[in-house]
Length: 144
Image 1 (cartoon, rainbow, N blue to C red):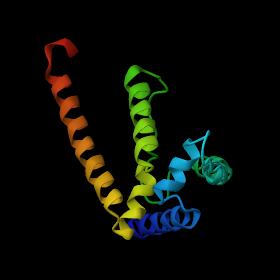
Image 2: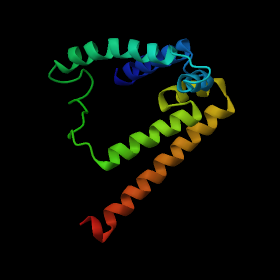
Image 3: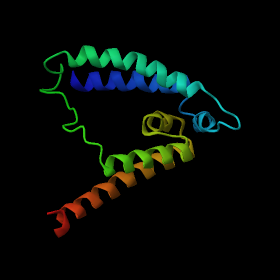
């Protein structure tokens, strides 16, 4: 049931991203082009997502536990540190350069567009590099 639930949730998300046009990097890049071909539709997509997610989180988190897991997987800190700020900045820069975020790039793989394939491959490589750097930092004597 857990895998079926994840599959259905991913399918709904992917259909929503595709229907809204957010798998098209040009549409996303036009949102960032305020002085040129600005397209506000990304703001409407985000607003619609928030309108559903905010009450959805309130309903789900009112439960003692999720339906298919023993506990909720939530952050254990509210600390805003340099790693969070730097990571958020890199995410935003990558999004503005490529026109993809991970949520849109994965459904865009279905189009077999070179841009989507290159973005996802680069994203996976970046994840491995970040894990390697984190492991190196944990082993360094300065982190003790």
